Amino acid sequence: MNKPVLFDYWRSSASYRVRIALNLAAIDYDAVVVDLVSGEHKSAEHLARNPQGYVPVLEVDGHRLTQSLAILDYLDRTRQLNLLPDDAVERARVQALAYAIAVDIHPVCNLSVARHATSLSKEATDMPGDWMRYFIRPGLQAFESMLGTFEQTPYCVGSEPGLADICLIPQLYNARRWQVDLSDMPRVRGVEAACASHPAFVAAHPDAHAPQ
Image 1: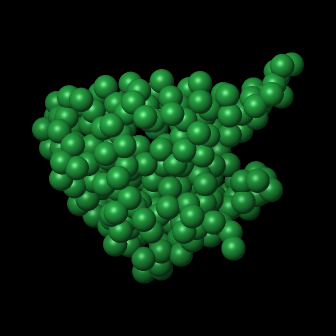
Image 2 (image 1 turned 60 degrees about the vertical axis):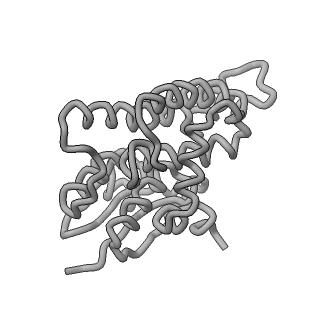
């Protein structure tokens, strides 16, 4: 069977999530860069892979998969990563944590969205940064409160990283990139510190995939 191929971009939060999961699953893969800055994601070649023109795209097990959350679910089910609890209620609660990041914060803080908002503003100064901070900080404050109903030992919901951690860490990379104040979020920062020493997260970090 062919070696898995991940079409991604180093700063893409969605790609970052999938890199973490691939590392957790110990899947050796080839990475193919799709340069979002140059518009390569809108090329005919990439649109043939994903009509939405997004990254990541993962070719694995003879399948071509898109949408990071769907890819994470596939890897979880086929590689037994235990990203979510078995109990239905606990599963829903952990999914709510993950979706608070991936569904609520991430889409509105996509750089293309912020840039479009900047183009519409007549009073833009540091518009992309202001836009990012406006949405990221309250979103993470809510996440911090949600974490209070779980025990961080040391990850979001237990002793092993799961779906919530995979979604949180790329968002924290963006938060720090845009200088979001995290000083009043000790639970979030604690999870961040735990993941910073986990090999799967370290190897997936954008700095490890940045253009040379």
